[in-house]
Image (cartoon, rainbow, N blue to C red; front, side, top):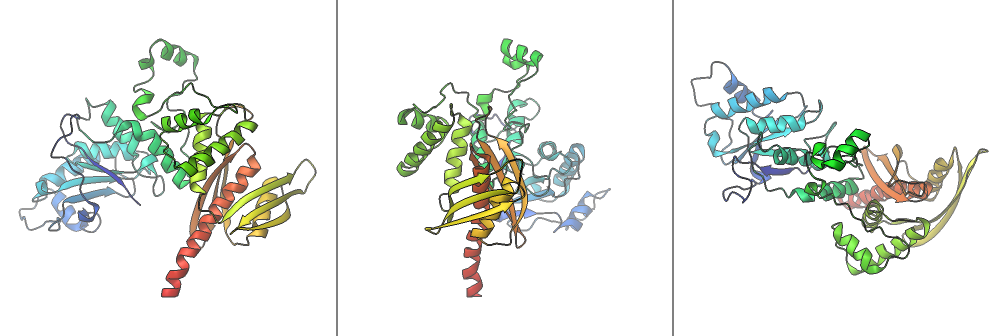
Length: 409
């Protein structure tokens, strides 16, 4: 997994401190558990008289102190880090780094506590993705330092206005949705439903908003696209949202936007994000949905008829199922035989309203690995088929990559 790292220093945030730099991963050293015994010895009380115990490998510029199972608490981590830095010989020759997991929901708090203890680097991930309950969320760490700089007087180079876009890009690339109430980048992070909250925000936004939405790159636009919107308005909206598409991608996106506008009265930012991200994700798919017809109702079994484009060849199949979704997936299995097991099937509305697009997430397990994909469409069954095919395409691509390696061995 790739971790986003940044170095903090007890200096004014702007302008950048000239001596600050991000250390290369190749030179980092994970102390725990590879050097657990010498570290434990250094933390012993009273401290050992000998200075021969040195867990620092010659040439290492970064010492990583991970809480891999998310067990520690902030006060404990601060004390641990401070004692370690005080007792490790030549500790001033390296940058100490923290790497916290979120099993008890304290990854961000522990990361900040580690910095308070003397660490100068935090390993974190966008949206907090990672093993089990995840890692420290980059956006939460950054905004905690930014908003509460009186308590966290350190500096970093992160452009906070890119946090929302980065979150959405990671979510699209991993097909892993961000929870609505996620701090900083969740859909409800700046939403106010309670009457007293709404009244307070209207009178003074700072009453219930400790940071402005614009600080994290969240923009409220009055430009709503529709079936009569032109290419210029569409390009302007894409640029406003941070998308820079090539000529062919732009033309395809515009055609699909107009097609969506014929089925949906208003096109919102979330619709455009889903539309563009889906096109980017599916640009190299070998298996594509051409058409789908589903017969469903109170009297089963339900029946689906599907047409797929498989490596340029059109194939048609009809299948029944215990419900329309099962019938759709059975069609895919008949057209593209496989042994993958469906692990996850989730449906969310992209926007409000009964004509909103459905966003479907599908995860397939195959040969010990899981592949996830998302797709959106005003028709939930079409979105379901596209999401399933997206995950299946990833499995096919992986098999293609593994085949030359197997032949070579």
